[in-house]
Image (tube, rainbow, N blue to C red; front, side, top):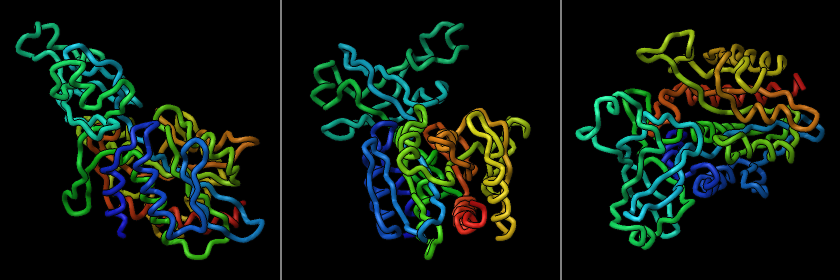
Length: 347
């Protein structure tokens, strides 16, 4: 299966933090043909193992399976759902979005509503409507009817967005943060034939709410090298200064020098840069991003793990729909494969 088709299936799946079951099943299905073993740890991380030579370095590739979303907090007597956020979501993009409430009885569609602008006071219209003033309308007439539909407090809520190809080499869809990284890992395992290193391809859970899955997975694997495969902000859009977000779509994968949670180990950074340059893979260097990735937790495992990050430049992340270039996605695979092949010379 082509990487674009893998990404489509992963993107369309539900995987709000803590409820990654659908994505986990897909990861197991896709990885099993390309690794020697697929297992699931007690926390819900998926770990595919491709065995290398005895005493060769252990490499952990990590891409998180979860996505930002919402969770049912209360159900009003009139049948409207109040919600909390799971992960970092800008309140400004919530109003009017189509969503899906994932219940035990199946998916329930809904729409995020608020007090109509026609009856707002002038000062109200000038303010951002915060998420706690919004609600989800699932068409229920009462709390009892909403419950009969299957809705319960604690049900997760995802954005109702479908994957679409757009332009010559771009795609748009939900949850590219970080289903893009998951797709890169799967394709890298497919392309890696004989490996000297033992490679652990890990789909982590609950990254968006505190890098939790990577914390426990890295403790269990305790690799010699860690590489997070994630996405990063592509700032090549109107209104964004280059100093704010210098990474651009179609200019190759981004290599993190330093971010909020990680200073990339110098040997790892040198290895990644050399792998890119020797294989004529375009790349970009990034520093100063306010966010971080699973690599931040992997690096602090036990006595420490030299770690770095390969990111796919992606526009509009942490929103209902994002955009990326398939060329950047494929170059991220190439760089991941090239890096794994170089690791024995460094560690």
